[in-house]
Image (cartoon, rainbow, N blue to C red; front, side, top):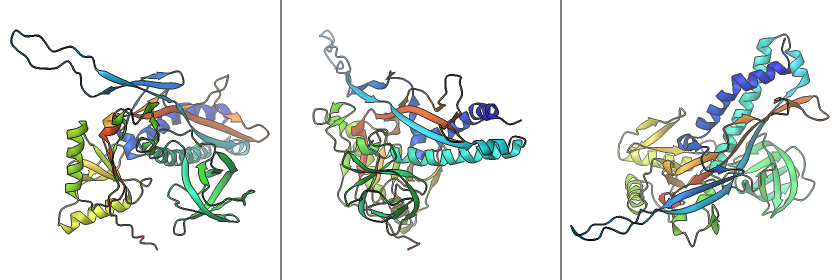
Length: 391
């Protein structure tokens, strides 16, 4: 007989490990390369000592002369707050009762809910990985009734719930996206906003403003501080960036890799870019009649290979952008891996007050830290192939 107890047991024993593995290794090809650790977590914070440069106690000398002066390693203290990452499923009482005597129907019910949770969580984890921690999705251009035009719809998907802010003031909350017009850069929401949504307002994922992980947008951003340290006083906190228009080529990639290795000691092991840049690179290879090497990555991803380094197109990277990263310098510090939130009696399914619905919440407390920001690079104006074949 299927019951709430059966459902909870399945979610804990049969689904949790599979879901955790999917979110850790299959959410995003870059995330799959980043190590995850519970080290350096103290209470609600991550406090990490990051090494700066080399040990100074090295030198050469006379056979009977003084030894080099001992110098300890130099460290900087990074400090950031653990971010709260949530995913929620909902099962109605009616659905549970309807499948009470049919185990197959019950399994189908849970499978459908977990697939939906995985799809949404993968999308948002990938988006946050390239975000700046604020959760900003796009800027409003105009609004007419339920249709809102934005400067970009790359980070929108049907079903997402959003809030729209004017600066630090929320104008409208909880709008659900019913459809996305990617050609005209508009979305249609479920209800007409009660307050006027004007040009320059910014959309965020519901309830997420300023609560997301410290992604690449923050590391490559222009904020005065990073991980609690002043960027001006600590120049090594600033990654290499190029805004000049450039053609993609093997020489460009190798020159950048050599520069980073010589000046920062970094070992670039993944290149991520917009789909337009990847197409331009493949076109470059074809023009010179070279084979396009494809390699397999952890998590089942495939990537174009440049001298054994994967070149990955990511939907959350703009079409003309390219990142060169040493993934060994990144760590996702976490209090724990993905877990279900449990009640006093260990229950994970909780009735929503006033509704015949039970919800279960998956949670992870974590944040991303890059030990060596100046060992990373970003190009923001690569000539790209951006032709839309469906236009």
